[in-house]
Image 1 (tube, rainbow, N blue to C red):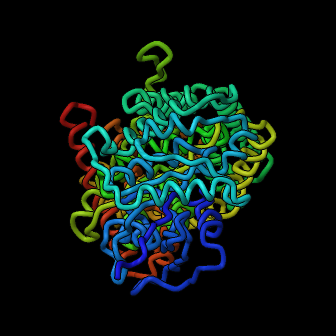
Image 2: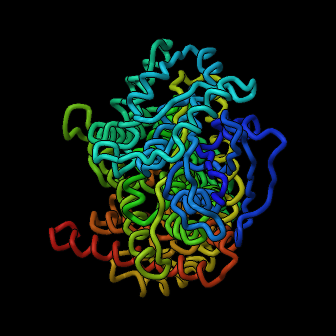
Length: 616
């Protein structure tokens, strides 16, 4: 006795697949779990037009045959005949969301290439028409080479036609030609899906047409990455070019206020605390608020317009080649603001090795806390001159530092996936939102919240750390002819650290500032500012920290310090959240260890190379 034909109902999440399954099977269905997997198994029976029964299985929603979750793995295994206790389907019923056709066609193209008897249900055509999109099912059928039936599952429209086409297709094996096979990579697959979708369009609104035309350029395999690099380059140019006036004004204001307060206070410990600790330390960090707000202005605008998701799409192939899951893009992107929420965002990654790899490389992404350090060193040592039309040398160096962090993360992931966290990352599919104009209110609110976070951090963690450092650097008091930074408690601590970091070009001042930067990266600026203010306390006036750096550091040392900050994990919060998310001191210690080794080696290589070129 021949078993009932098995038809797999398959498609992307939110395509209306379950609603169609229910319409086809009615109450004739049961729910269980797949053998060995805690994934629900929905099976039902449909009656074909001839009166013969057919068994339908509603597979978990999936974006492709390269699974990123247990649900997607089950779908892949059933379709390829690998699922224990499940026979190979005799036919496929592919469910597409008509209003999001080009995205859903990516998976459909992969499924059609399997060569099984296949019928496509073009579902939710009513919602597509409501949104201004009308499709020609006959043209779509001609492009795909399989029957296409328009359906509205929740209203049972097209159900009888669908069953009729399924019955006629059963037993007719399709030959798959080379031209029918989907492109091997995600970007070309998306391009082919969009070509098929555009061929089926009868009418659409101008907004939809504009979106597709923009995507044809912004997601182009060659033009897309070039445009993304240009956007990032402009963003870092703006960090310097746009912030110069407000940052200089803020710096002058804080310096003047510090001098006024200092002149009003009698000489002694209190004056030193206020002037050398608070104003010279915390004030040196606050002056970089304009740069941070400009950086976040770009990020918020790119997110609001819908471009940020497209940037993730462009980066997916590169990340996959480095062994990272495509799902790692959003956590790594979040790490540009701060590694802590970035590491927490890895909870969306199902594969444990993919998630661990993303956690281990997240600190390499250049968080906003590094921006004050980068800006200070660049402003002190890199000339503010143009190197091309509209291209400033300072902005170019900043851009290269961010690229260095991204490249470091990808190289580290590549090495980790071939050694201690063996495996390969999987690509992932994503829905592309419509382009839209950002709302000024939302942008302003986002900038306000970011400024509040920065100032709160400056008033708590940075202020507290700076006061502790001031106390350690102020006692015991230096005698005649002595430097305060050398005879104080902090000076002795710095001397011990200096023995380790002297070979890579770090001076005593940097050595002293390294320890407090474990509290927060921005403390590096306040720590150096406090130390230099104490050493120059006899001058009686606050002066520019940039001028002091330029007179006391060599260019080779400055470059080594910049490179050190690309790699070193100088933030106790990052270490703490890594311990919590991995639930392992072993992996936390490994992350801290490999990042410090990487930072030491990279800084040393930079310093020795710079000295060899006469920059020491």
